[in-house]
Length: 330
Image 1 (cartoon, rainbow, N blue to C red):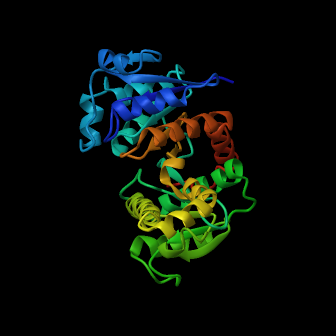
Image 2 (cartoon, rainbow, N blue to C red; image 1 turned 90 degrees about the horizontal axis):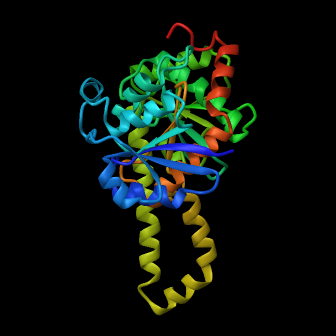
């Protein structure tokens, strides 16, 4: 199966050079990146890839509502439109997350049983992969939104990661039900009364331990937690490498543990994952990190291709529709 990936070449802090370089590296017989951006600029960087002219750019700090009104011809909106119209199978962007959500809703559309789409980001937990949802699509939310995020995350964990009967945890400042702000406490009550396997509140310090198979929170909290984890992981790995290089003994020891160190970096480095799925749309979208390197873009494109082949959208739609009472009224 050949997967056509619409890539927003102008999205991200390192666009277009790193985005285009990643797209070129990700191309295989089964994965065909299609770049959206100013044709002359992008074609010069990637003469071997298909380029769709989209000269307007949505800035990283622009308001999503303004972009939706004034920049429907931008690279971000055009890439999303390609999925909505069936020209491409998945869209990947490292650009403005709020604008990506707006473009997804306008150009791709929302699944009938979904109140708000949410970003499901994989976490490299020690006990096995887990899912953080919402990782940044909705800065504000209500308790009933978190309930639906829990159901989407559960479906994703079952269908795509293969976790049977996944446990759902609510990210909070303490394990006790009364801990957290008003929204968290109200969400705790909703999750406790629902049919999912709710394991209670979980603390941020346990995210990499595997506090729960699915960790639910609002997008503001989730995005902050994810960026703290990513920054900490990168700093620790870099400091470890620099410390080994400070002495001859350290260098010799480094050679001996190099395979293990390489495996650890491969498992924990955020660039390995590339981003997360924007769940709840009628088509597949991958939100990559704003500071994505070419390696992260390769990973994001591969993540998108796996989602297409794994029928993420179709399976999410089927599960939500067959359990239509779940999250209804939100």
